[in-house]
Amino acid sequence: MTMARPIRLVFRALAAVLLLLLAAAGATSLRVGGPPVVSLRPGLPAVGRRTPVVLSAAAPGRGLVRLRLELEQAGRVHVLAERRYRPLPPWALAGERTETDEIRLEVGAATTPGLKEGEAVLRAVADRAGTWLLRPAPVTVEVRLPVRLRPPALSLLSSQHYVAQGGAGVVVYRVGPTSVRDGVQAGEWFFSGAALPGGRPSDRFALFGVPWTLSSGARVRLVASDEVDNRSELAFVDRFFPHPPTRDRMALEDTFLERVVPEILRQTPELADRGSLLANYLEVNRDLRRRNAEELAALAPRSVPRFLWRETFLPLRGAKVMSSFADRRSYLYQGREVDEQTHLGFDLASVARTPVPAANRGVVLLARYFGIYGNAVVLDHGYGLMSLYAHLSEISVAEGQEVERAAILGTTGKTGLAGGDHLHFTTLVGGLPVNPKEWWDPKWVRDRVTSKLGTTLAAEATGGG
Image (cartoon, rainbow, N blue to C red):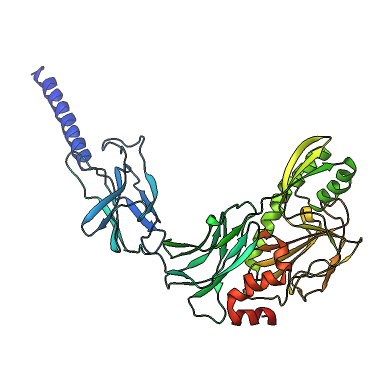
């Protein structure tokens, strides 16, 4: 009797432990992961050449097991991406796992061979964490999208497109109904098209510039794209005139630096003092010049979509041209080259404080102290065409003011980075500086601009819009 009781106690304890183990085994065999929360977001309303897609999934608790992104069309399944993860074991309450993840990729003709026009299904599949006993069904999310692979129709209406390096031009064309973005791509610059006044709804024109760095017309192309970036391109330049930039050397004297640099720093408080006159000058000549160029480009979208100018553009009367357009300047200090920049305009010198006329009718977009340009005025002439007047001793107009051709904007001076009293003048198309000589030439304006735009637009231009 005395030995039987302990034995029974041991058996009872073992039975209890066994029951606990069986209960735990049963519980872990049933502890599947919760259903992941899955989101599938196409970036465009259709599959085109490159449609961005974002797949995101979250599985709190045991974590993710596998994510798969598929595209199915006509019974054929393309696996676009697949990731596998190590979830928590069913018996573990803590440990390393991946609870959230995101897959970003592009889907379309450029990435998925064999894709055809029609419809396709984008499918996201997220597996659930299972056990040795249970294999729960995955979570599936589907999005049906049309597949559009045909680029918009694009055809030329104008002819005889003769353009020069650093110059400008106009092209007239027609686009198909699926086009949502059209214009001229010239190197890295894009010039948006606009509705052709008096033309059909599909008739467009683009005023464009040719970067001074572009030495061939092969990279000047007419383009049109639809909402899923299917793109048509046409080469349209019939003749290209290269004008390689000239080179110039400028010696920097301390007297010049002492006069211009401190004033520019005072007028531009965001510039930090670099500790020396030369270091401050280099920051102005490099960084501030670049920032001013970016600000000029940012003005272009504010240009009104109509022609404001009436006649050929005016130069500064009686002025001597002191520089060429887009000359490459080397800056020497104490006989050593310290910088190199491109001068994008003409320096026009006359007598000190000469009245500066508006080159043409327009609206004042900028009238203030403007970095390297000192006191400056920018006029908008419509459709992205602007003119810049810099280094003024005084400004006689205000931003938002409408001015007529030959109206006085201010007087010449030597504010900003100016060695002496003169006018820095340039024209800009879409924010790109282009050679002003073209716009001063009545024959060039007639042959390259108004004649291409037709009688309706020619009348609008000569009548002021």
